[in-house]
Image 1 (cartoon, rainbow, N blue to C red):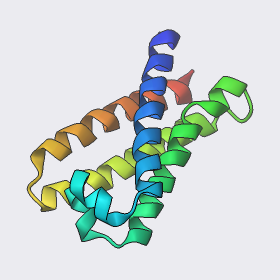
Image 2 (image 1 turned 45 degrees about the vertical axis):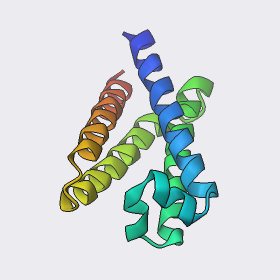
Image 3 (image 1 turned 90 degrees about the horizontal axis):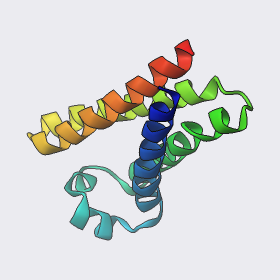
Image 4 (image 1 turned 135 degrees about the horizontal axis):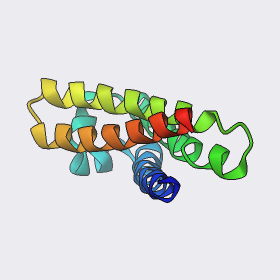
Length: 120
């Protein structure tokens, strides 16, 4: 089971790192072409979301891997759950149901990591 959780953590880290890096570095005009929701937010909010995702990507792997404060791994997973809940509510408000489905998948994977890492 531990191997499965590590695979999930790796997938989540990769997904959130790529998304966070994009939101943290690209200009808003370029983001709006690939992420239509970005037009609803100012650039500082988008950067904040991106940095939150980058930190979550790091936090979901590094503490558990290094053994330094491994409690931070499930806490990072909880933070990513919060990001996905907020994203899903925004997509729901805009009737973007495909976005919600993707958010729910990432939320469930993050919840699996949080539960397993808190309990084991």
